[in-house]
Image (tube, rainbow, N blue to C red; front, top):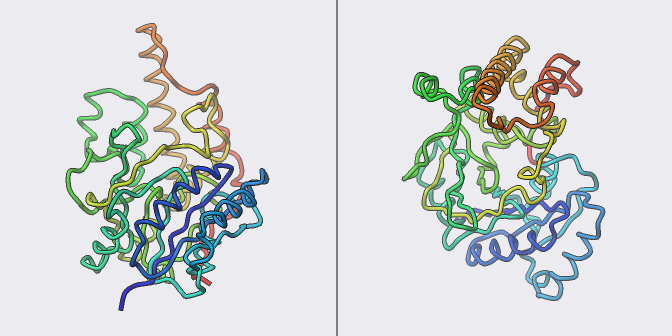
Length: 326
């Protein structure tokens, strides 16, 4: 029996891009059981109405393969996707597989089938993620090790000899040339077994944005499930369309809160503080080096002060994991 797939596209004020992602998903799901759930994450800008009208005009809503729904609140990436997961497939069936596709991501030919096939042939894999490239064809780093104290220092000090010494702690893996098991991968194109989600829970909604997929992969690994990077599944990705990350002049508070939450959840309070100390030390050394060389360090405004402030203040939300799909 073919598995039922629920593809979820989460929209936040990018209706045109979301419709483009939906179009690609519907095309690639031809002949696959299930459908696409387009979730508007409380955009408040008319996105829901505009997407519904356009989907009707294209005849997408007549087939029963597409549902357009409103989450009712903007609780972030995890909360919005959780809403879509709980609803099940557009026709009301419980999904066997859940596929998350970013609103600014376009599945290339065979991308979705490649993920389904990969999971079918790898029983221990609970999560399968795609190879992602930019619209210019350049590959994006989407295969990673779990964050660690040593990894924080290596990433911020940006010095060749230290990177060589800590090469097994570098978070971003070398660009893979074949499918392989990884610690975690990007949620821009992520397929998950419903069986696994029933066991470990959905996304932790204490993460507003960033680190939520890292946390999910970490919980999956702790429960004995594997995460795999699937080279044969290719996605074209615009990147940061909803968050504006590429234009950040100042890192938003939710990034610091998510980072702290991840480290405290998986390494404890002491481990989180140690990782922050490593980050601050590495960044400080990098800034000193840039000062001596009279060049811009590229460090966002106020970054170290904000990093320490968020690390030392009271955790704003309790750490929890929500169980089940329904």
